[in-house]
Length: 23
Image 1 (cartoon, rainbow, N blue to C red):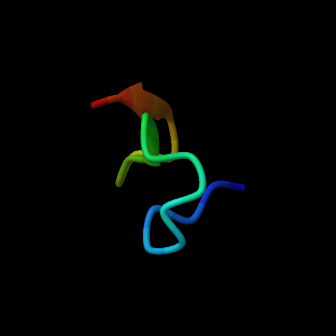
Image 2 (image 1 turned 180 degrees about the vertical axis):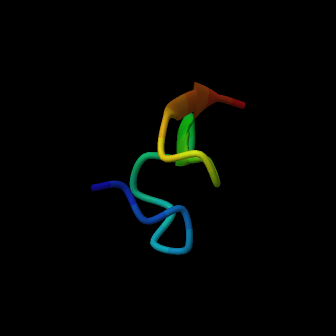
């Protein structure tokens, strides 16, 4: 699970539908 608030994996984010996307 990626937490975009952490900023560790800023290129990846957890979308509302539960899928991973790219910035």
